[in-house]
Image (cartoon, rainbow, N blue to C red; front, top):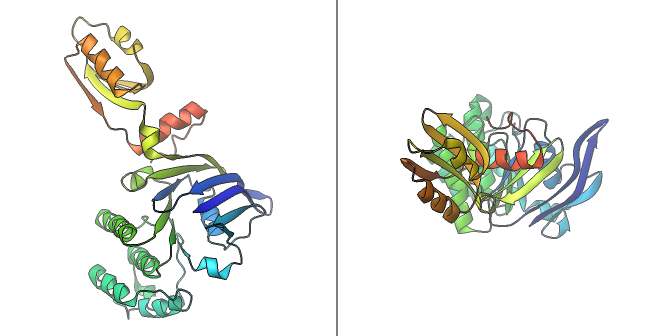
Length: 300
């Protein structure tokens, strides 16, 4: 478990993190959402023990991580622009990381490189951005760390490769004690993999919640009222969070139980109606509006 308590980090006169408190449970994919400059990279680097907290603390499995060499062997950090040794090849980088991660799986490393079509003896400087991202993920998987911290890992990957990386993470979680923490400014990238999500804004965590819990009691419904039905009366029967009208089709996000929605729809007898699943983007918009925040620039 990663426990972050009242974490504060400054760089000169810039406050990067302010009173951040969060808990990242083991065995789940944790998504860290935030706009550029929200503090995601600083938070990940502090969790990895690269930065020393100015105030507060970060504990991994009950121990403070900064200058804790043994504990750092449980963590691998993939930055947005991953560092590779000058003139190195994938094989050279694998040999390099073996000195820090004794559990490095060489056989799997070579197998994954082959599947992805990455030459282990080719200079990384000749790789495209997407190929470098793929290599970073392969190394992150094969070092065998318990926690994998990913900063904008999907940026630069094509759609097929993004799904392949997500499958890699899920497969790894099935095989061993493995917890990925994925930071992104793009909600849609995390929608189909994250179970728990934290929203970081201006250096602070606005909230950190389980996605399934966030979905409880909030639904999106679409319906076409009957010719004799008063639209306003029908809509006022619900606790409406958002609504839109396209021709005769009304779409609403409401706070209610599924049973309440079904009961009211049967009462009003619309021509057509259905209950739709909420997207991660819609969940965050609803949650942040309740808190008084405007994150419309986040949902891109």
